[in-house]
Length: 103
Image (cartoon, rainbow, N blue to C red; front, side, top):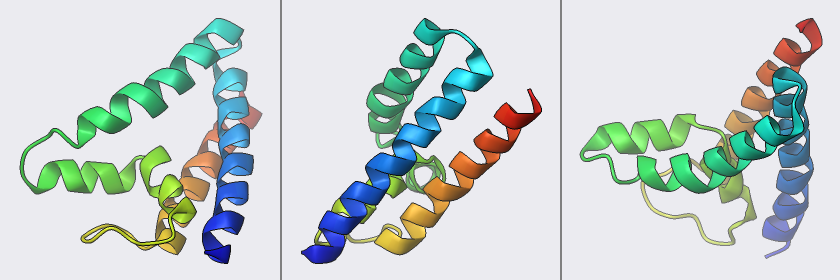
């Protein structure tokens, strides 16, 4: 239970940095908000609807869903571990941060 609570705090901190990098790349507040809401609330649930193993692989590679697994006390079957999911999310955030720094 304690790792899930700590993972929740870390996930929200990195998600805030992720949203900041989207805003820095887009350079427009409305575009950043739309991008984050669209990514977290539209794309993530839709990728689970893709049939076969392609949906699961896409779900494992996009940042928000694997990162959110670090907030769960029990690991769902056939998905990344919480540590690996959070690592995928941190890699995405670091890549976007590098792009934002260049721009």
